[in-house]
Image (cartoon, rainbow, N blue to C red; front, side, top):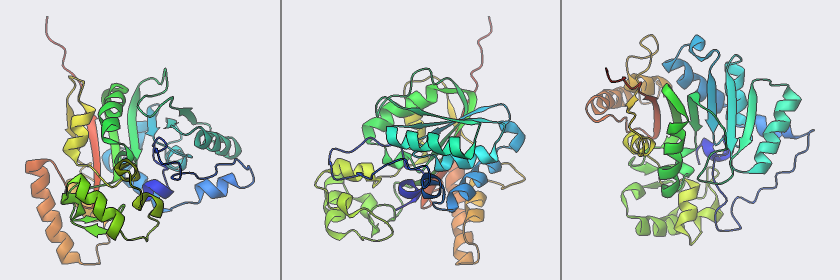
Length: 313
């Protein structure tokens, strides 16, 4: 499974199956910091690369950033250390995880973060305010289809004009290999009923994949686990569903990468299968230019809310 399970504890309501996601969340101050901060070391590197490949550090000063689906705060604290002059707000549905994050903030004396608990899986906390930046780190794939259609417009409405939303570590919906939940080839192309059957019968129980979810008779549990990823266009469509504001996909800063395909190539282990990856990068330049997508294993995208021009009187 991707970073969503271990690192960012994605924003997800409890599934109907009571046997799933039943982790004990006792707050023990002597153990909570090492338990919840010493997780996957890739998270800070991923966040740093995406944040600073698209914006300069000074662009974040005095701004507000929402870390949506923050879990116990692993991604939130990573961002707070990188951006000490930015107000970071973490939002999570599970109250116990909010309590853990608040405990860590108090023990670590992190002054530029605060945590809010959402009242339900399809709403945001009251009076959350407006933000200049949003982060969804390994979160989007865990939202159910109906939540994607309700929550994403709410997040869009919480973005100021010109604000940007960062999405990373979400599996690409139509990648040939479904690495996140099942470890199966071509299951992304199957209809839901057949994909559900194959997941229960043939999924690989390794890489931290949850066997309880994989054996669940409820398709919704598999969706909650992240079996269906996303594409850039699905995300943009859901964001702007109830808005007249336009969205556009940003390209990295010129000094960091020429385009999103180059950014992808830089993020790979370039010494392994170098020629193949260079060929893929060339293909991705074409797909990004003409189709607006980089169909790699993960969706890594930054979407900006365009400033609306005022009509002349």
